[in-house]
Image (cartoon, rainbow, N blue to C red):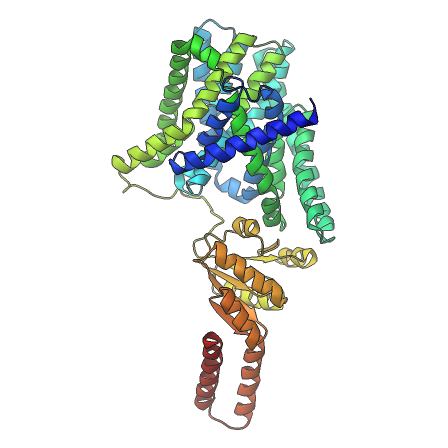
Length: 561
């Protein structure tokens, strides 16, 4: 395909997104549905502006890869262990029960065992991309229902590994039992090897790259880590998305993770939007027009079956009515991995072309109605479901805190502030852009991470939207002023306590938006003056009064000017 054709397609995709997404956001229907409709309009079954859907989808699948990486990097192994009851309990039961139920129904329709298993378990999976995007847009990811949804989706992503391997084995005429045993054994071995290699290689390599202080090289290294591990998993016959998740999990404890998240987010956002549009393009309106009753019946049946099963399972695991409904309706659709699973099965000759088109249309339609389903359950929750039984799930160690302090700059001043916060058991996180310092202090137990605090995406990754105070201890006066401006613009409710060097610097910081600016020369002078007065025999009460009056006059004078 000529390069101009690719440019033409990119322009069409960007134009469709720019027009459709703001309209759907304004209507309160979310960006996901906007991307879907935009893709359907410009795709082969709409205005036919773009017909090469497969080419677009191959690129767009990188959005899912980066999404899984970000999920992994935000989920520390320790936190995953605290969520084990929901991940390995609710998640496992959901996949097994839903998969077996749908497999049984496909068998009743007259298909053979191989087709039934692939179809049943493929449709049992939900869309990680859709689910997390909707929860993120509505700021519900850290709610009880959000964490329960994430737990199920994580287990489903893990289940993709044996399912994809199973397809390859079934195509080679292995039995179901033998195929599943090989799939599980292979998956476990590959995952263990990747985790061991990543654990002992990734952080040292990133430290070496970060030491060069070249931001574009660090971004390249982060992308290389994600795609490299994903590629290795793909070559091993497993899921690229799972490889990305494992890469994120390996870096979850790294002090580079906030900077990496900030660097990866733009790639994820663009490619994930492209993925949603590619899904919209796959909706075969010709098949929908030819057999509307059959397609509608299958879509409705799939949604109803999954909702009923999820409602029952979530109730068994102790979720209240409101959270139960949200999880069940959000996970009722089928997901992006079904496209991959069914596509691989079609290539291997297990699924016929006609059956593949029907299945992908059903998956796409269930994904398309998901934003509407979630809006519907929101309405039901507000009108009919009591909120008095809302309670947090036990044993979920949320890393974020509503009262956390962020320290920008972790030199001597920053460390002293951190020690005071530790002594009072106040939660905080620190950011510093010197990798050697971060490595040393992180090893000493300080929650300090590598990152440029003047970047909004880094601050977002560090939880600035949930913090109550940002303490700026940067040595560079210009860098401190720029940081105050950025934070004041993007987080107007966040209190900013800044370290200043002198009277003039205090004025600049306060003008830029700092809540409080403390002059280090002033405070040093007061401390030395205190000692001199005390040595001269002046009573301590009089000294305290003199210092307070002088301090008050100094800072009031700054604000007046």
